[in-house]
Image 1 (cartoon, rainbow, N blue to C red):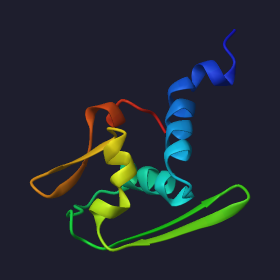
Image 2: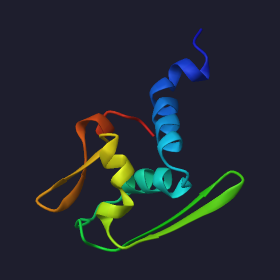
Image 3: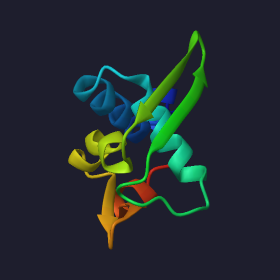
Image 4: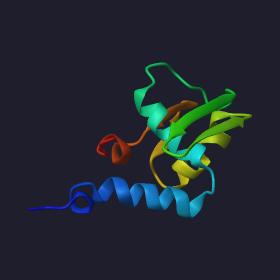
Length: 96
């Protein structure tokens, strides 16, 4: 029988990558929000991220989507195609 860590190892790995490369919880909240967002976000568009998690709340105001998701872009989870923020194939395969 598999334990929770083995079942969700990709999600735990992603979370660890994010927290090791950024001290802002809003980065993770932004990625989860992006997966649930059905609109279009342009690279230079201002972004506000608000997320609640067990034990707290995270807020982030960013001058642009490029700035907001720079950690996710660096880790290969998002990209900008024709100035539009997109999840990469790597991220679309992750399950949240």
